[in-house]
Length: 433
Ligand SMILES: Cc1cc2nc3c(=O)[nH]c(=O)nc-3n(C[C@H](O)[C@H](O)[C@H](O)COP(=O)(O)OP(=O)(O)OC[C@H]3O[C@@H](n4cnc5c(N)ncnc54)[C@H](O)[C@@H]3O)c2cc1C
Image 1 (cartoon, helix red, strand yellow):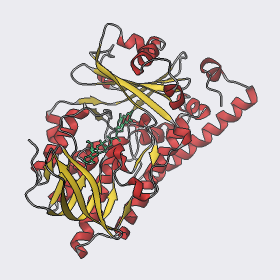
Image 2 (tube, helix red, strand yellow):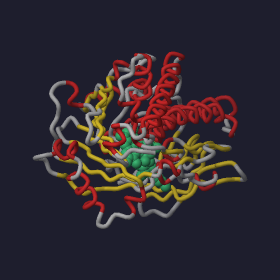
Image 3 (cartoon, protein in one colour):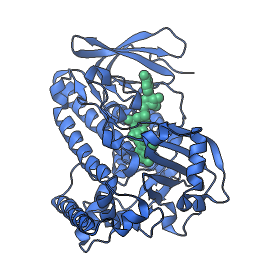
Image 4 (cartoon, rainbow, N blue to C red):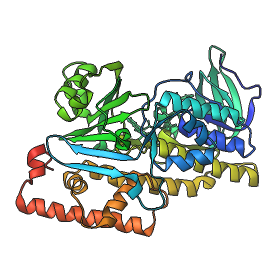
């Protein structure tokens, strides 16, 4: 049964119990504030977003949940392996090569398990958690958020008042319409289809846990191994191709596996577990992410692209920043204003911008070729690995110089490609701009 909180007045109400919501709620409750969290589903529930980054590890520690997570035996990964379909292009990324003190490993997790762990941890930290509790509306007085109207199970909707409301409703983005709506980036117009499999051809030794990314002429695949031997497999493609498919999503997914030896061979002898799911047109940004008495965290604010596995890190990091901003304002004035979120918004937007330039680069042939080309400068390899480890909040000078050197190297490759016409990479892959 869902528990409805006894009180109808809290310091903070958090809408949504994914990683962004749980993080915000836990940190505020641990700081001594009264917090209610409303989650529409009953956990555990399936969610995509299973490959985490090294910089998630210190965040789990700060949340006080790292030991609990380690005790569940998650898959530990030390890097990522990239291959380009139909070519000998390969890049092995070792997180140990990253700058800025990144942890040398990260986790891969089934989100049903991780999200339940994080929500239970919020509960244990003092958050009044209600599941099967759908927030129907955020209540405003003038421009100020003052609470929510929530429907818990089959009960009649009721109002819960709060000094601050956090929208952590993920792709539902409860408050985004009020802030100008979700804006799409036409250059990142992609869709994904995915499923779990009973196993795959796993490499021997520690690299067996690495995420495998197979880039293709118009998209890419992920293979994310779990510690129980199963694997998450997904394909990303232009939304137009997805929308204009001749058959079902399942037929498209199976046909694509059959046509991609780098994926098909890994899965030989293993079967699909359950349905093929899909998320069309997944990229968007909300222009503003806060106001008087409220803010958006995680996917409710923005989702770029899954290629660098940054979603959970960004959701949890924005949740941590929101908790800091709200906690500071409530302690000082007992009220949270739009201005209290300004520093957080700037920091978050800068981090999104850093990921965004890499994500766009990934879909640009000469940048992708630069990524697959051995650089004579170790600074470049280290800087790219640093971004892939998730160090986008406070990159060091060394890391920023390395990123600039990567950009310079990609310009050289583009110039070379232009001078020679299509290079061997484009000829093999059809990846010409
Ligand atoms: C194809 C694809 C692959 C991805 N792969 C990765 C990956 O490998 N690694 C990674 O880090 N990220 C990945 N992501 C991104 C990741 O899924 C998200 O960034 C992450 O889950 C965001 O967390 P969140 O807490 O903001 O939102 P969510 O995890 O979506 O949580 C939001 C919660 O709010 C609840 N909710 C919604 N509306 C209401 C309401 N009205 N009232 C109450 N509750 C509500 C929902 O039930 C949900 O539980 C991927 C995304 C896509 C599309």
